[in-house]
Length: 315
Image (cartoon, rainbow, N blue to C red):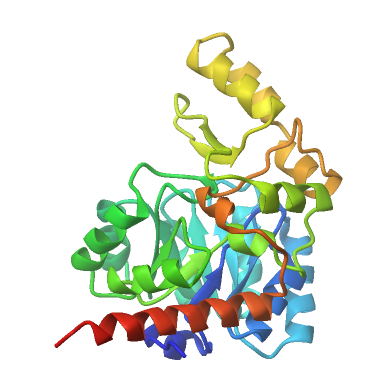
């Protein structure tokens, strides 16, 4: 079994985080991951304060294991989400889509460990100076909002730039990715796409089926010209969006209307034609739905075997 400093810091068995995917990562998924020994994370993006508090309390009633909340800094509910997280004494938060400096003092005073998601060395260094506990360094292979650098290039550069623990994310769905991340200097991994195909994940069956059947070339990044790139599965809407964006056939408002409410439709209604099915490039490796416990234990076992095999090559 693989253990690292992040396990002791957060009180988890395996250094495996579940991504805080908006509309996807609810209390059911977070509890399943935490009970399996990883770090389950509830997404705060689409929840107002009252709804987020309900999800946190639902999770607290079902597990005594550590779990976290993802604070998406672009959420219209971000201020009340931070307030709720502090009041409910959540073990830790991950943050995304910006700089969380504005909220760090309140979170620290409430005893909440802060682990920002970063996609560049500059932001990683800034967050370390601000006193965060660890970082999730996310490569462009991931689903949802993405940066430019690949995981393979990003992780070692951030590991070299900071002294706090680094969690690798982007393009990781099995033990090979886990082992590779550790070899690059990370002390754990975060997976989002792999948990889309977890038994306990409550996304619509249509969405889950698309993830399981996806090939390596079935994702596309939209929103590059507008400065908000998002990786999703190719479908009728995303192809149309990409064509209009790249050829200048629609302005920013028209493009926004095309994606309005599209993630919710995919997750809740199973609209895989005009909905946004956020998904990472690693989906081609996912060929079946499994319980979270089996996913985590299989990944840990495979990574352990690979690392032992690698050590056998040494004199």
